[in-house]
Length: 120
Image (cartoon, rainbow, N blue to C red; front, side):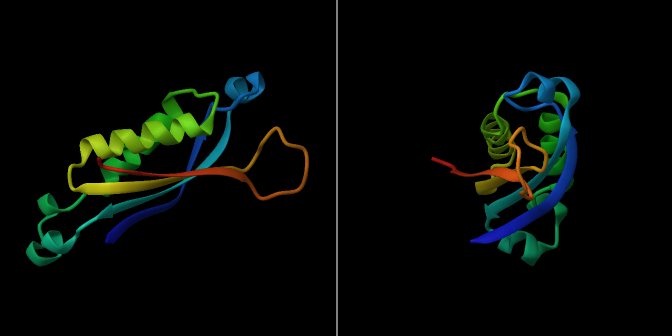
């Protein structure tokens, strides 16, 4: 299976279980891997046979920056379902959302959720 990868997309959003996270916002880093067969696009060299990764980025940006969720799990579900709905060529998706600032006190790089979803 081939992959199209968008890595370390940086956004500012208002997600979290704490009220101050949803009020003041914070940074989020999103990785997305799309599972698909790219042979047709590779053979034809036509943009119409490929996934518009600019549009994928726009979908991620819209959900992260314009919506608010208590859980990053919900945000990941929304991104994955929207991408699968819009791009029939995509057979599956991995969404990883990293939250560098968390309400957890301690030393760490980030907390994250990673989900994989596939067409049924």
